[in-house]
Length: 246
Image 1 (spheres, one colour):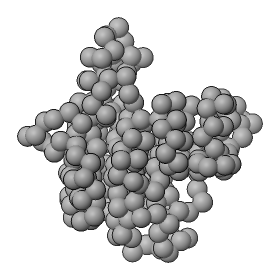
Image 2 (cartoon, rainbow, N blue to C red):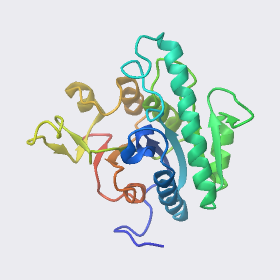
Image 3 (tube, helix red, strand yellow):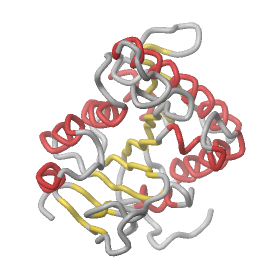
Image 4 (cartoon, rainbow, N blue to C red):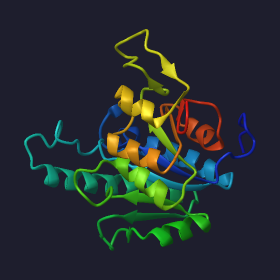
């Protein structure tokens, strides 16, 4: 096993939030099998440390919201199509994990029993207690809610210690867009109320409020280096940590 700065895990149970784009790699769309395989390898390393892992994955690599693929569509219909995209990503990730000999279960908020289990909180917890990775697909099962909100909701339900939010192209939270402002300041720590007051686009306000109300820490880090998944799960000082008082 590769050695990291911290040899013991800080967290016992984590929810890893992956964007759909993180599964596409440099091609920017679709599912890149090599990228998914590499992410699965890092998740296996996290499991090797005895950490319970649940994953929430987005669907932006397949279906964009009203500003993209669904422009002009009814919002609810577009959101349901996005939920289907997250299930496709969840199944691809499950396949890659099981090829790494990691027992994995996909649970969906919309029932589709031929391909996945329906989401049942107690069953999800039991899977993790048995060492299985659980992937939550189809968002919350309701339109008008993002997969960020799904991550916050599921983290609260399964009593996760932290949400690990993997961001593509950025290594944390800044006071402005670092791609547009070379003087943008990166935060090492923040509180949720600061995110809301500053209007920082870390996650949507529903997800932010849910994390704040349930006192769930959030670590935002760069997914471009897949090894950061392991570092974040072990509690290394990377990216930006949100929660409590900054």
